[in-house]
Length: 324
Image 1 (cartoon, helix red, strand yellow):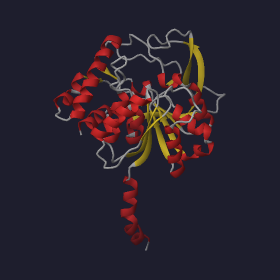
Image 2 (cartoon, helix red, strand yellow; image 1 turned 120 degrees about the horizontal axis):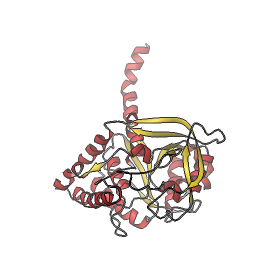
Image 3 (spheres, helix red, strand yellow; image 1 turned 90 degrees about the vertical axis):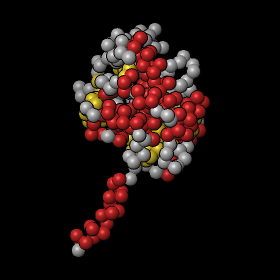
Image 4 (cartoon, helix red, strand yellow; image 1 turned 135 degrees about the vertical axis):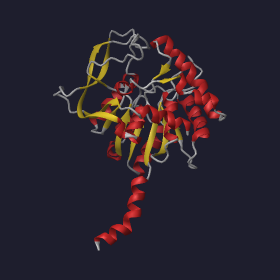
């Protein structure tokens, strides 16, 4: 009898296992921003990659943080080109400063409404201001957040030196709104950290994106026009003509978790230390906060799942997802 019941319910079980996971996508997307061009491209690459993996994740909504007006417009442009799901993905403007946790926006209200309807993870690719605003103003919704996957954090003492290690960059997403991270950790929400350390050996060079230049698709042509100047900037700053698509690893945790190595349940704390940044807006500061993880920390209740290494094969997944 048990075998018969299992046979009857097998199609339902298989369907449930293959159903895409619904995810909220929070981003400080700036790709193509005319101001101080070229601008960071990894959020745009990650959004396209997410749309191309609709069999694995379904975007329940998108919210923007910093440069929210431009972010809204360019997100709609990318959706127009690459959203082939047949479903409308709503986009909302969030915190324009990325440092005013607690101030309600269209994004925080929409995110809160979505969480009241269903539990889901949040993929947060910029400062986590929008997410922390929901948690701070609506603490009852913390239990509705399955996990927040962010591009931030480091093992204690790990420097952020891309390419040929000519310059040291900061942990921008964390440093922009440290209070927001405190709100998430204090609320006991599961936080997954996947930042520079995990992404450091991913590099998309010119030959990796040649197929975009050869494409007849308008979206691919536009994307290529944004990526090449960013690669050139990396050449002048870091000595390597290519860019690290940092934000694809937080997405990869949701779509291809087997391609990463993790420190599980690792203690987290914020440390104030000498500023190691040599480029960026924070270089004038003598000290700055660091979001550090270490099993040696004994006096903190904060814990995280920390992705520290990308395994061979994931870079190919990134490239192939852009080719689809």
